[in-house]
Length: 257
Image 1 (spheres, one colour):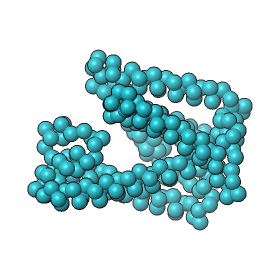
Image 2 (cartoon, one colour):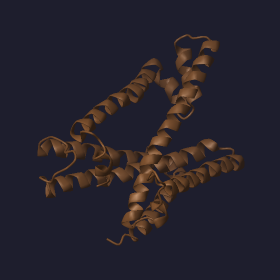
Image 3 (cartoon, one colour):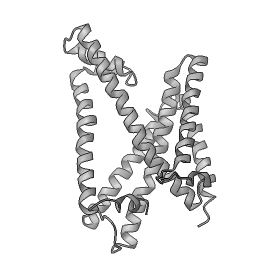
Image 4 (tube, one colour):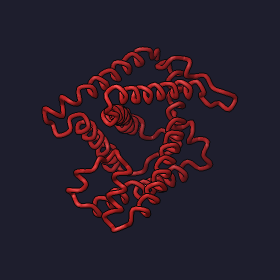
């Protein structure tokens, strides 16, 4: 139903949605898979193991040093690449926020979120969801800075918030694939704005494979190499995941229908 809201605004969803999926997939391959593959090919495993993957400047320095570029050229490239990296963050956050705020509004209308999230402006944009989202994000960022000032270990704080947001994001996608299979099975002939083509076997593969990958991603993010040291260091992460589940259950309990 949420999908239908924006899909119905398209001129021809049956053609536009497949085009968007294919085009988006190609862009992801170009901007994510190819650079990561090239980076791992260009650098030896020993060098990669010593790098901090969260430090973009360090990674780029190592990459361009390995191909023989001078210090001035590397500095210029790093500055340009850094600005592009910041731009991707801004573009990503803006686009994701629109989706998150819209879903929060829909959930509030359904009774599972506070009614304040339903407030929209004259353009029907959920502005209160945007404000609350910004406040929560600001609190997290400021909390990370304070943690850095106290512990001088911003990397650990960043990793904690990143892993927590990563896990909760992945968990949110898990029921989507199960719901897709359930809806296709219980009401296969329903008229839809767009229907994923394929036989029953292909449809199951398309849903089960990403479902399994999601589970694997969550497990390895939570437990890493399954060592006692890793698990002990991840206790704050486990606490955050448990807290997110508690908040989720509180919200779910609000649903009237």
